[in-house]
Each structure stands twice: as structure tokens, then as C-alpha cells.
Length: 384
Image (tube, rainbow, N blue to C red; front, side, top):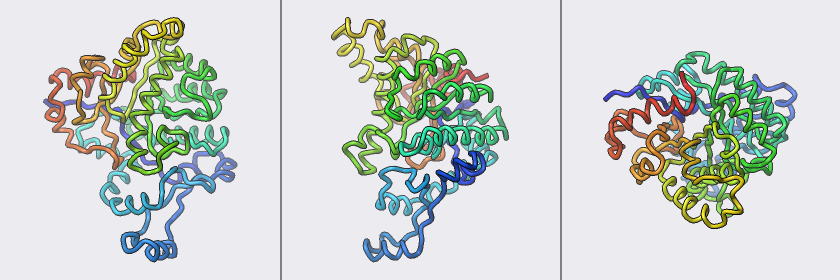
């Protein structure tokens, strides 16, 4: 069966000129975003200290002011990354330009795709920049993305990036994003600027998202300058990457649930991306059977039905090709709440031939798989 696939997690790679060209000049002057190049002198010093394994040019390091955009991106990570850099270099270049992005979609059999940021999420949510800078760079990215998707707006679907540093301007951001005709925004799942997702300062924001029919897509990552789970105890890439995506997503749902956001705004829609879905049976089972019945008096205001019922009413999640427990997920929430996302062109993801997707997801019927690839995204993201 040939599918008209909607890719719910595809990425752009932001060009380095974006920040200077689209942000206010004063913002860029005070807190520039730029690439710091490796030097022959640094390379020689590394080789003398570490041996021939370090005798390789490191990829440019993205900086914001005097601070790296990536946190815990140690020298050892940079060397290891340099050795495999060529493996995905073409794909990352293709994601920088809309016409080559479309070409990669054609090759992969992708009909339409939601366009998510790569480095912009790390820039805008950086803990060491001011609220004004975060807001300005979020707007800069969104205006650049608007120009990017205008190449083919029927196939390239805009996803707005929202700064959470100052809740007072978040509704203004939603109004502008909605004026572009977009129906989806992306947020990090972490605590940002001291506020978790259920914080009372976000109340007007959630209310407006529901009113404007804006789907909120949570997309985590490993190297944010912020309190990503695991970063308080680990510093290795292995451990940080193991924790960041799935654990933050689980806590994002929990924050929305226990704070009453899901109870107060029954029409809000959320998508949980790049964390797979096999966490769902265990997490919802625990919330339903262990936490929900324990102290009813403590939760009766904000949680008035089983947590799994809120999930089914509000939430969609992407699957990982080949992950276990897919049938258990379908039994728990239904296949209608499952999406597909490729994570193209990021190298830290499983890569596969889309033509083999039915074979890799043999726990699903043909009809269920067709809904996941074609129908469910339309419902989640209000696509025409």
C-alpha cells in the first residue's frame, strides 16, 4: 500500500545569517548568535594533548554572546561528532533550503511535513539570555520560517516557536503566529525561567491557545542550557541523551494534568514528539492505578477523571519505528492518537526506508497504519 505520509516531526537547519538578518539590530549587537570556527592552533594543541584521534577539524560551535548554545557539549563530544560529521552533512544542508527540503521529501515519499526548529529551540530557551533577547530571537526565527515555507506552503507546514522567558508576551506571540495561518507551536517540556508548564502565569496563554485552535507540540532535546532532567546528575552524552527526551515528555504531561490545565481547557491539543510511545502504557497505568486513587481529596479540583482519559482526549504521540509495546499502546489509548515523525535530518535518530514502514510496524493493521500516517495528523494539527 502506498501512503500519503504526513511527517509530524521534520526539521529545518537554521542558516547562520538568520539571527542577524531577522532580529532587531540592537539585539544582535548586544547578544549575537554566530559560529565559532575551530583553528589550526587549537587542533595542534588537541593533538599534542590527546593524540591522533583528535587530529580532525571540529565542526563550528554555535555561540550566543560569549556562551555556547549547546550545554555539556564537551570536547570529547565534539571530536566524536567530527568523525561522523560527513554521514549526515548532505541531509543537514538539504534541510537548510526549502527546495532541497522538498526534494528529500519527494525521495522519502513524504507528502507534507511539519517544520520544527533545530538550533532555534536551544537559542530561544537558553537560560543565560534575557527575556527580551529570547522574545526577539523567537520572532526572528518565526519570520524566517514564514519565508522558508512560502516556497511551498501546502507541503511545508509552519510550526511557531514561542519564548517562555516572559509570560506577559506569550499571548502576543500566539496572536502573531495565528496571523500567519499556522495552527501549531512548539515548546520545550522543561522548566523554563523557573516556571513549569502548569504554572499559573501561563493561564492566559493556554486559554488563548484553546481559543485559536493552536496545537502545542512538545519537543525535547539533550543539550539545552536549562534544567533538563538528568543534567543535575549526569554530564555524559550517553546519559543525558538517554534521559532527556522520554523523561521530560512524561513530566510535561504530568504538569499539565496535575495543575488542571487539561481539566480547564478540554479542547486543547498536545503532541509529544521524539520520545516514542512505549512509555505510555506504564506511565498511564501508574497514574490511573497508583496515583489517582491514593488521595482523592487532594486532586478532586484538577483531576476529575482517570489520567488516561485526559490523555486520550488531549494528546497525540509519535511512534519510534521498531520500538516495543506498540500493541499495548494501541490498547491503552487507541491508534487514533499515534503519529509518525521522521526527525529528518537529525543524525541522533533511527533511520529507515519509509517504504518498509509497514514491515517494521507489523503489530498494526493496514488500516491503523494508514490512519497514523495520513489521517491522525490532520486531526491533531487541524490540517486541511
